Image (cartoon, rainbow over all chains, first blue to last red):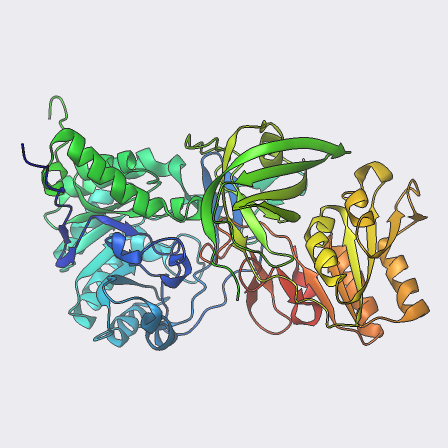
Length: 310
Length: 271
């Protein structure tokens, strides 16, 4: 009897070759170095860095977060160091061999495109994820992900601005997310990331005011997982480009649901806050699942969900 | 050198009422727990029992490391907390033998006073928990006066522990049931006027710390404060714990603090 081979977890996300399908989501993993004390970053597939704008941003006043059942709302307003400081100060601190996907945000299409251009040739950056969906920024963002015409213009502009593999991260705050995925595919995106946070509200009944300084926030965490899974399944059926599944993934079982529904990779987000080793534990759990089920390659799982009657 | 933080499972040794709504949680960590700085904190998941993950409440709670004792490679960490909401109410249900997961030690702690200095430590409410290790370590090299404030004698945390140290201890309670009636910051003002001081350390409710900072500033003394805030992670990625700087922009309580020079903060904007 020969010892079972370790399962092959490698996957390809729109031209980004990954050693395993477990990434971490933008805004939950900083610039990579913050979680280095807790794990060997080479154990995960890679990470999506905090969204970058052309200029640094300070973000919203407190309170910025509030807890909800199995979830949380945030209204950070994309505080970030700006693309230049990211390239000069943050990237050099990331260990070699850790793929970085840069998340890009701008209040205008031209600003998105400019950030993409600045990232050309940046070491360790293997792809760009366009944040078309941040739901809590008054000055922009929500419009791009919610309007198919605007989203098409954005996707076209960033496609022209970069030759790196290009993912568009969709907003879930739409009637038909599959239509949005098709729009991005039509403009040349290499992949779809879905989903971003759901627009949400919590009110403090003592003060009769919203619990967040911004009023509305974005809901994340396990509470949104079934909604995210449904949307990822819809996107994966609608487009030929790969889909990266995001939304409340905490465990390997959660991640495998997304793979079965057609995601070629997944991102662990809010779970990083509760457990800085969550993403590595998801990798280990997928390995264990593959071993238990005789799965030699993780690609066998992708899209393997069986829907009666479909 | 600041210790590298860990995520570990800890065993509850005891979780007893301390008076009022205050409780003392003692956690045992089998091995590898690093030396922490006075004023550092940990993130404690109140909903999780061992490996059984619960997602409601979702987020871990930041808690000051009150005291650490060592027996060989084992560490016993004490946390003083007050039951104020759902998370702390669930934490109060933890029984001896339960497993809880935690992440720490986190943040930048208090720099200790220089040898021979006179340090005034001002603690209010649960803020007292951040000051015990500072008082214990500083008392070896500096002259330490500890001023503790609470609503009432029953609400006062850690009094007996502070009495066991080589420090001068004074207490103020709102209702006069222990020590001087009134505010602990009145004691601070009196102590500075009486004997002067080298520096002030404060941890407690924001109005208390703000008042302590004003008193220190008027006396020309440096003042270090330790802030509490909502946070989701504790290690600088959720950006939920931002507080306004004295200039433009924000500090993160979790990794720029929780200890700050009072003059580096914009006190009007603090939660």
